Length: 324
Image 1 (cartoon, helix red, strand yellow):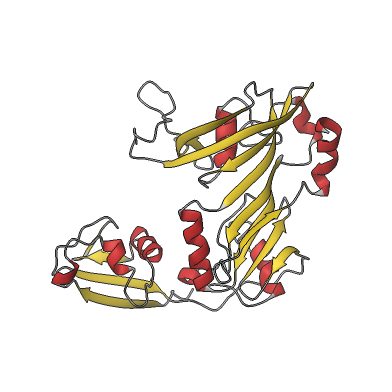
Image 2 (cartoon, helix red, strand yellow):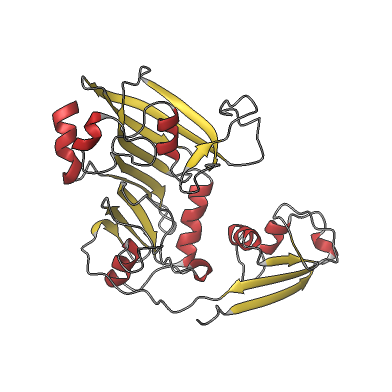
């Protein structure tokens, strides 16, 4: 197996950079080009400060020696997949599409050539290749069994601009879900620090305090996990013990909605990881979660764009029969 090619940069920090955070300083270096990319390289241990791994928050003192090892973009080894894409919008800069349930977004174990990425490269070869990863165009992800709207970038600059909107939480993201049990409050917010489950690496869970209570206040940062915030609004209920909810993501952590609703006592119908015990779970074809709305500012035209898409055909009949 051939090794990934590396572009090495060696710097000596000048006195003019004293007092500046490392990630901010490196973001202005040619070849790094952005603070978010600098931070990613630091987190990947691709930046050594005086021969040691460090943190993006390190405040420069001047005179330090910095080694940056940047993986160079590699030719795609992915195979194109003949799969018709449900494209909602496309121009020379980006694509907005509706991902079907059951489709993995990018190659992973067990899914080398049957992913959304494979279908994308069959559609066109013009995608961003940020950090040289084998995930062309992918700015954000949806779980395999979640359907809904995604945006894909066609250049690194567009990728960077969209990633910044996600980071600054200016993206509008709304989901629809059906949960087990009747949620008693008409609306509310769920907050916590999400981290890997302590006993199951495939799952995530909210961090708890010494009394085993979920930490829901941002001020009490436990030092592990990432802050997560989900709003919900009840759209309807069904006598069989189901709730139809609309959810707004303020943060976009892995499995965030699934964990938050499950820990609320109302796991999503069809969720085999976080609670699939409701009798109606056997009647649904898959996870009852759909990314129904995505809004963002176009990085080039600056137009405010908003896309909506109702449940796909595999779930629309269930919704009509239970909540309309």
